[in-house]
Image 1 (cartoon, rainbow, N blue to C red):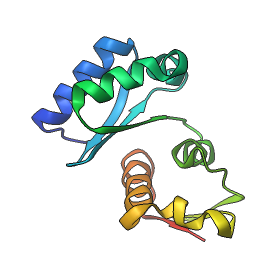
Image 2 (image 1 turned 45 degrees about the vertical axis):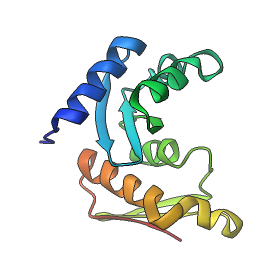
Image 3 (image 1 turned 180 degrees about the vertical axis):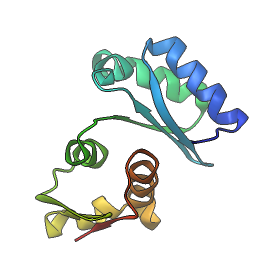
Image 4 (image 1 turned 60 degrees about the horizontal axis):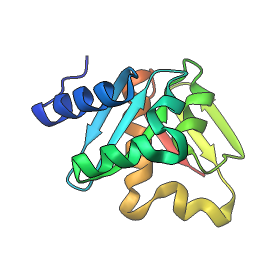
Length: 135
């Protein structure tokens, strides 16, 4: 079970109140917040032309990333990698390997590994997975 601190609880409350969506998970660090919404809620979370998400960014004073949950692990990985499109997602026992176009590898990992760290954290919280790697 995931425990949230007061910042995360406050962010979830603000996000759900403004968007009318259901938040499944929230990760916050100094520079950014990552929100995971239930399947089917991504449109409402972003809003027309990103208006809703931009309003929330201003309120939080942080960069905001919003992803849609899926009960299908491969689809969930694809959602977390957006806007990148993985070439292949291989699931072996408790390990997931994401193959991306070599030209997009840096973006898939993110600055200082932030993107892949967030992907790892979210996947581990919602699936029986020990590690997610980029190939």
